Amino acid sequence: MRRSSGMVLLILILCAVSPPAAVAASIQLEVSGSPITFGGEVHVSGVIEPATAGELVTIVDADDQIVARGMTGPHGGFAATFRAERTARIRARWGDVTSAPVAVGVRPRITVVLWQARLFDRVMVTGRVRPAVGGSRVRVSLLHAGLRVARRWTRVHDDGRFRTDLPVSLPGRYRAVVRAEPPDLRPGTGTSIVKRTPLPSLADGASGVFVGLLERRLVELGYRLDGVDGRFDERTGDAVVAFHKVQRMDRRFSVVDATWRALATPVRPRPRFRWPAYHLEIDQTRQVLYTVRDGRILWISHVSTGKPSTPTYDGTYRIYRKVAGTYNGLSYPSYFDGGRAIHGWKDVPTYNASHGCVRFPLWNAVWIFRHAPIDSAVRIYH
Image (cartoon, rainbow, N blue to C red):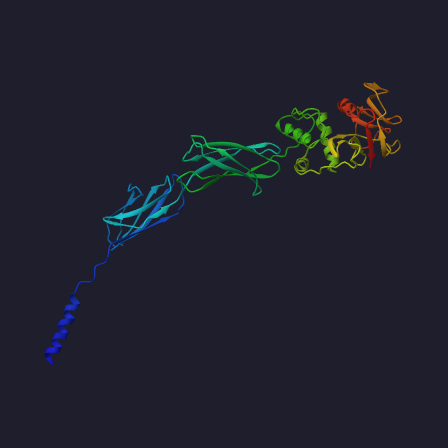
C-alpha cells in the first residue's frame, strides 16, 4: 500500500517538471487604408508569435525587395510605413518565418482644374495624372448640379498632363470629374472645385465674350441678327426683344438673369400654317414675324403692327408690289393689303403702333425685302 502511494507521488512530480509544448513561430501582417493614392504612405502592422521584443521585421514585395522595416515591441507587435507607387502584394518576414501575402491597392493621383464655365460656351478642363503613362486615356465628365451632362475621353501626354473642353448648356454649378485606369494601378478619380456660370446683365453699348455668346445663342434659336460681332447694338437689342416677346417675358431690349435662363430652356415657337411651303407669318399677339419653309420657322424678327385705330387686319395675303429704296417715307416696302406694307422704319416699339403696316427695324429692311418676293404668302393672325 505504501509502495503504490509512492509511485503516484513520483508520477505527479515528474508531470510537474515536464517542459510545456513548444509554440510554433508565426507572423501576421495587416494593411490599413488601402487603396492608397500614388505617392501616399502605406501603414502596415502585425504581430509575431511567440511575442518577443526587439525583433527585426522586414516588409518585402513580390520581387523580395525590402520596402520597409520595423522592430517588435514588448508584446511582439510591429508597425512600419512606406510610400506606395504601384499596386503590389507584400509580406512580412521575421527570420525564416514569412506572413501570408497582403494586397496593397494603389490608385493614381489626379489633379483637375475646371476653368471658367460660361453659358453657351465650352469649358476647359485640364489636369495631371501621376504616375504619368503617355498615350493612356482619361474619362472627363462634366457634372451640373450633381448630374452628368457631358463626357468625353482624352489622351494623356508623356508628362501626365491632359486637356479637353466640354459644352455648357445650362446655368448653374459645374464640377469636373476625371477617371483614370493606368496599368498596375487601381482605378482612380479626381474632382475639381465647383464653378458657377455668370449671368451678366447686358444692354446697348456692352461688348465682349458674353455678348458674343448671347448673339450666337440667339442666331442658333433662329432670331434674326445681322452678324455676330460681340458688340451689343440696336441689332442685338432687336433680336433680344423678339426673344422676350416669344417667351412672353417683359418686352425689354436688354438682357437680365432671367433672359439667360430662358435662353437655356426656351419656348420654341411653331408656325400656325404649313402651307404654302414658303410663307411669312405675322403673330400680332407677340408682335413678331416668322419666315417659314416646309413647316419650320427659319427666322424670327421683331415687328410692330397697326395700332387699334389703324389696325393690321388678320387674314391671308400675297405680296403684290415691291419698291426698292424709299417710297413715301417707307424703306423697301413690300405691299400685301392695299396701302399696307412690310417696310423698314426708324421707330419700332415693342407694341402695335403703326398705321396698319408691319414695321421692321431699318437695319433689317433690306433683308426682309429680299425674303418677301412677289407673290409670297403673308398670313396674319392673333
